[in-house]
Image (cartoon, rainbow, N blue to C red; front, side, top):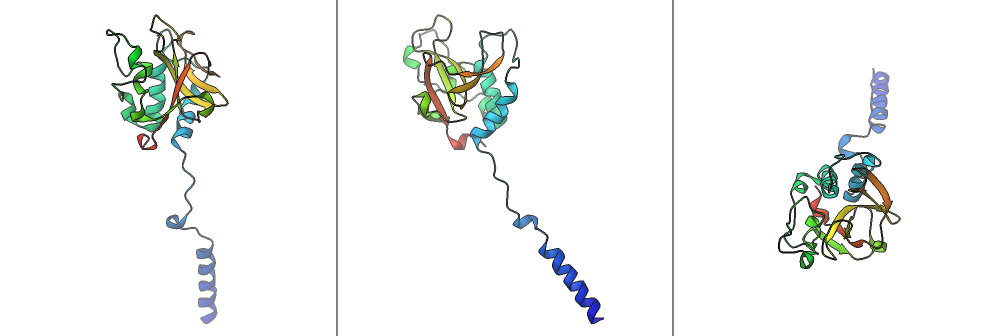
Length: 181
């Protein structure tokens, strides 16, 4: 009987020693908001987004932000974008415009391409239309190595990974970590 109890205890000890209880398991490293943003954006590369509809860069960017950071990005917008001084009296503000998230209220403004980090929003000025010089007209997401992913207006709606056009670059936005759930 003692031998049976010893073998039973030994077997139980071995089993317990080789188990990792869920409560004590090491959690896998969770992804950062920038990683989650790029992970949500990459599958769109070279795919159509709202084919034939112009001016969809912010709508695509918002779709990625909603997927990665939560529903508040569906309508979140500033009333004081960085390009406010260049807008005319009849120019509208709204969540569909490229400048709608261009504000320090949502994070840190980045002034040079070299200082951008993966997941930063990229704002370009005067990429199309008859806007005043300095108006933000295009937005995408910085990937790395001077490239960003964005939904182009000029190619019937394809999402592309391309070099940021230096001549049109205005700024970037590093989102506040508390904005992403």
